[in-house]
Length: 400
Ligand code: C5P
Image (cartoon, rainbow, N blue to C red; front, side, top):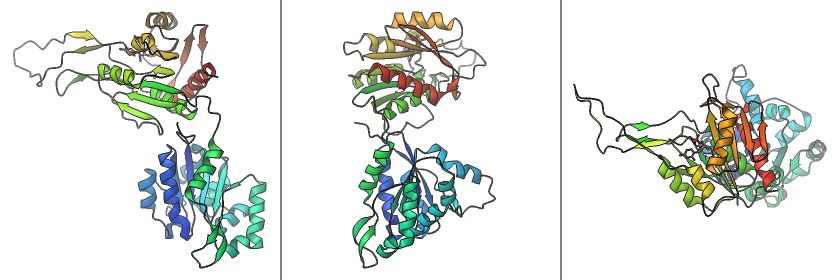
């Protein structure tokens, strides 16, 4: 089953303390669960773990205080929490907890904590007497009253040869706390969704191929949105320049025939969304590179129709309960989309106008109409991520 963390993003602030090394294990667990992590390392935290280790594990840029406060990109840094679903401070030192309680914004980490409107989870780690000190007690009470969630600390032997509460909670316990905070409604839990995305490449010879302008953005966003609602997702993608969303099983293919084979191999599925721009035709690929011969006529490409993946899935013995296709049209959009729904035998068609100047093919936005057995729903122009989230929510209604 997909983790509730798949497709989510955590902003992880690592403050100072010997337990900072455990933040690396936490990052590893989060990544394994399909969760994106952006790490911010305080100056004290950087005494214990290096930005390089965090960068290697998060596979993303690590933010530290080693930039100039006049750096124009600093505004961007402050906005880091916007892209996150949750802010986690692990380990949270007595110092950073006190700064949070006082509302200080004296470095990047505290500035982010003051600026964020996302839920915050702290995992305190400090010497037992610092933890039990009245100042820390008051700070923790203040933070709790503001809705800051806490995991740990554990009780046990400490690095400073003392015993008592103050040890950082173990990474699996912090992970469980993060999961509990991020588990939204998961209406597609237990369902398997198959999504096709991107273009296909049909070889002409070993170096040339027939392709199209599909970026795979819409299909990939749909895969991420279905995973976020709890579905187990198989994403069958043609060649694209974007990464697969976290937490989905990626099957990379090149040609339409490979795409069909990968889709059939992924059955049974409850849901199929065919968002790929499959090449309609292929040609017999030459084994050697076609040569230009001066004076000779150019080669002629004989085209053969490719299998229709959407139609094949719609008519398969193990037909997914809900099959959704796309219709990219340049004119008579709704008429063509309605006809396509019936011809292919799918349940829904997401129709979009890709006429010249629409900026949709390869762009970031999409304006679609959902054609179902009940009629047409016109959706406003939205980001492809929002179209995906809406479509996933609409699909979830079918399985409610
Ligand atoms: O027939 P047309 O290409 O316009 O249909 C588009 C829809 O059919 C899309 O959902 C696309 O992914 C799917 N399709 C397919 N296999 C093909 C051609 C289109 O799955 N060979």
